[in-house]
Image (cartoon, rainbow, N blue to C red):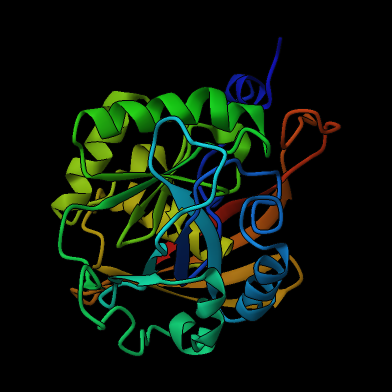
Length: 306
């Protein structure tokens, strides 16, 4: 049976500029089963899930649920909920950890400040909270209720990475782009990856620990909108630059579906990219069970050194 993943692979659909956009990720540990819309279809109180989703809107914060790889009891998390907050902007990335007694406590956070990179001291109450200083965090999408490919391909990847002791591994509810499964987001830098083998994922995590990204499997950095993701990756392919924090992006929409994007290097070099929104042809399902469509894709029409 063909899946959205096999069709996307057969059609050689580009990975670039398909990452979910978020400057800051707010990740809540929630065991038990997840539904297709996990914030309102899990053991999390649906009213709290809706309120978290509303609080995050327009702030640059993306809320998701996480759990450790392996079997998951059909029960809630006892003794509080672990929380990870991560800001992904170049040169200002951070990961903070904390715990809340109830998920509703997160509604007291300043979401606009979090999106702008101000953690407000989150996680400073002691215990295991505070700044994360360990290995990179690997978030692998495994939510089969959202798309079967995420469970069939994501869960084995998460389990094998966890068994190998490679970084800190979590299952996550949704990273977008089911047809690129298995997909993984790596913190603190916020680069998303797709079509990963175990070997490729380990290379990504080793590189991340050294402050490098892996362009071959990269979908984009979540802190940039998709035109910016496309331009950054185009510059990386052109130059071979893989250090994570040396490039910044500034984009301006010239007219609907067309952007001018400037990519600047810390060493003073800069490039201008013309990026246009196109459609992926021929039609293919964006997710298993959906009717075929033409997903949007970002096309770098020109790339010039300034």
